[in-house]
Amino acid sequence: MMDRLFFVLGSLSALLAVSLGAFAAHGLKGRLSAELLEAFEVGVRYHMLHALALLAVAWAWSRWPRTEIVLAGWLFLAGSALFSGSLYLLATTGVRWLGIITPLGGLAFILGWLVLAWGAWQG
Image (cartoon, rainbow, N blue to C red):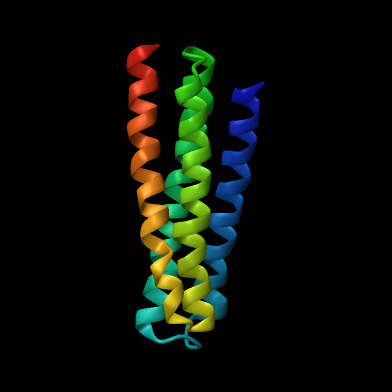
């Protein structure tokens, strides 16, 4: 069941990333400074990358059903929310202190990849 869950979450996350990328390209261009638009686009890039990582987690779980694989999926989701979410909010609101949250999302991404590798190795 975890493989299905992470495949659905990855698919929905990719849908959201594409939608937000289109929103940035068509709705935010000209409304945000180049610096803030770039921050938003970095959020979209990492969001999409980790949506695909969730699909990899679904596949990995079907092959090596281990706790580490599931943990990696939740870390990727947390990373997307913290890293990309903070960049989306920073860009659209201009609230600079949100940048403090971004590295926590990056750390979640890093840990997710490490735990995914460990789970595959142990599997």
